[in-house]
Length: 326
Ligand code: UT7
Image (cartoon, rainbow, N blue to C red; front, side, top):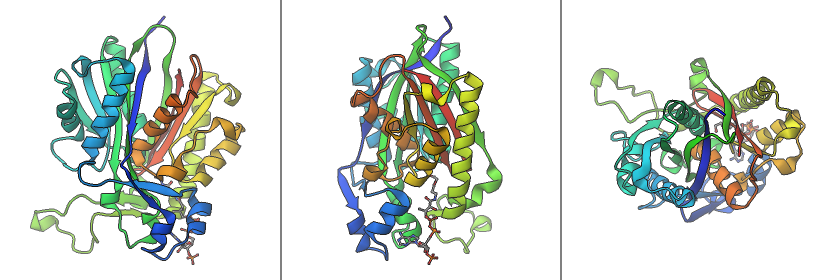
């Protein structure tokens, strides 16, 4: 049997501080009712000092390593899906490497916005195909609270901080990643974006830009996200000859409960098979799928041989789906 990339340990780490919808009612012109019905979000976590992107990513990684029974020195590669590390250089992956003592790894970040974890998992699979004995940490970690305009009710109610991690390695037992279906469309970049730090090159300074907050045309993103995630999932299942009925659990990116419900309907899958934690954490971008996998795993929702379906959509645009035999 060929080699597949199997998840052998999962972990997550959420900052302690909870920001509720009623807290937000005191900050901007919004209501618990609006946020709940339009998004499904009730609470989100907000990082404080000592809970930087690399720190929570490292804790999630340590929890995944402990579950896998893998020592940090056994890790050959660390890939971190993130767009909000506390440093631009070095990468979040290098900071996590230092923090956990993964002295034999090479490490880099993957910026695919909210699809970062799926992109990273797919890339890890390519390394495993050439080096099956390799053990890889695939992490999603974000600190979106640092890039949120807390006066903009259109965006500040949506996002939260958190990290999730998986240890993956080669398996010859048939379990692991069966296939991924990934896409990008850079033409639509300006519907969802966040600028870099202000340029120090006077020729490149753009005074018309208003800071480096997340900017989003919510309605356009919503429409595109629904269609893109549904199409990529259906194409993926079709290409693998898998029917929606055979899927045991769907872990979608947690951006909006209405997007998730629409996906559930189009797949014709029962809602008990969809993992949802958006009410607790909001949208944590690249961390969201990784956190949800860890929670589902620790809750015993994933059994040997189960088919786990992942899907995500984010800035870029980037999107896609993956199917895993657990
Ligand atoms: O993770 C990456 C991908 N991101 C996504 O997938 C997010 C996709 N988009 C969405 O989830 C939704 O578009 C939102 C939740 C962002 C917005 O929901 P919507 O149903 O598309 O609302 P809308 O933007 O059309 O706004 C409807 C109304 C507007 O008022 P008017 O113009 O109708 O008077 C907004 O100003 O709701 C108003 N509004 C709010 N009201 C109370 C917008 N934000 C808020 C708010 N509280 N926080």
